[in-house]
Image (cartoon, rainbow over all chains, first blue to last red; front, side, top):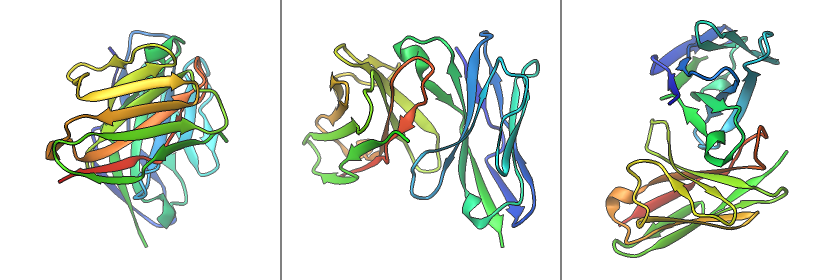
Length: 118
Length: 115
């Protein structure tokens, strides 16, 4: 079974600075997807960024980028120029590339609460 | 982007009664839907996976008879909490996908309070 580990329960960053959220995972599969989701106080799950395991290039989305180290099974999220609106709970998630029903489920880490100091 | 809607957003029910939460994919056909439960400041716990037209696959430790999941059409899945008790009070979230490697879309979630 796949597992996702987020060992830091909380982090804080000064507005306009950069913060990195850590995530490691364990799997025996070679083809999979990794995600970072943001959950603000509204509780709506928002997809921040997605990485395909077969791609060597790290995904980026505006101020958000990842450092994907497949051999180390590490998938960290970097938030640049942090904004007050970035304050939320962030979840790292794994999804198998196998396509049938339950195999397409997301496995989440425990999450990390990010606060942004003005 | 694709939209998944949950209803109701908030529900309060009396202990011992049943309550139904709906999850609808508004602009796509969802072959697979997932139901999660989330306690405050904790992660999403997968309860079950439902495929249209077939029985849901429940995660270990989730009571099938207590949390009834039905995926009767490609746009609707329902979660019924039967004989609800205060410990069932929680935030329930559904998600849906067309299948395969398609993006998974989340509903807004539903707060259940059992009094």
